[in-house]
View 1 (cartoon, one colour):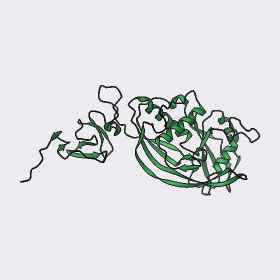
View 2: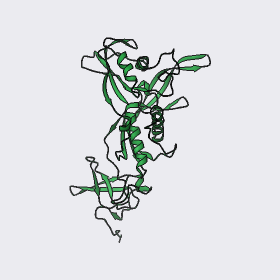
View 3: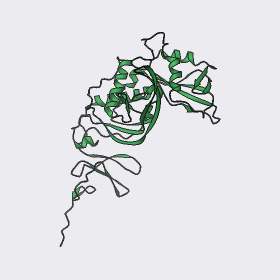
View 4: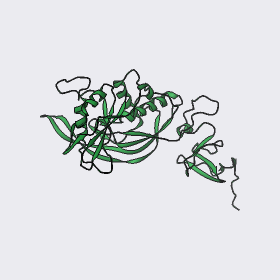
Length: 346
């Protein structure tokens, strides 16, 4: 079962800790020794059964840090507890630390709990550490819905195939799209051992990752795609998203966000795939968000020509929200729900 643990280390909190140092320490705690290659927990296994979170300073005296470890296999818990006995020495770069107390369990979830159906069709994901997608020895700071979902689904399948959600779409056919994002890229130098012409050698890989928030929306009228994507995001909160999660990349958290409608009243939850569905609007009626306080309200029938203009009335004043680049015809009055007569010039 996926779980999150915290290891408290006594030592300088303001010392510069190399990016690869926590990975080296935790790998020594959890991975099989080099004398047993090909084991279930070998360093070079097809899928890592643990991930890391960011190192954080704790307390106001700058004399301790917290190392976040995420386990994706129950059997690793015993290894972690055995390796983090009080007083055990830990070296992170040039800094010397001591384990203050054995690893503490922070949170855990059953695999079945991750796939619980919640009816969610919109998710706001906050990437707390740089997230990237790796392809052909290149790291790109863009986690498209396809890349995010397919990567998580493959990792889940290798870890626990009995509960892995079925992803029915192919690359390029994902029903999830990005409706909003806010963030920046951050470049890290990641020391790695690679195979070169003369054997294995140490190199620094330039990794560019995204930090910020991304809002995803599911267009699929059926619940299958939304449920699968929601389960994968729940899994990402333990496993991390994208590449290099064993180095602390791709740590995510889910923020609350407003939900788009999925059907007209009395109908099934399937909606036609058209412009309104793409914008998260029902086939009849309007959902809109008041930009002043973010509240969501079911409002009057849609008025406008292109399916992109919505409004609500607050305190007798109309607040408009334009969801696309086109506005309705000026001859349409969205507040009174009737047409105005065009003015005639004398």
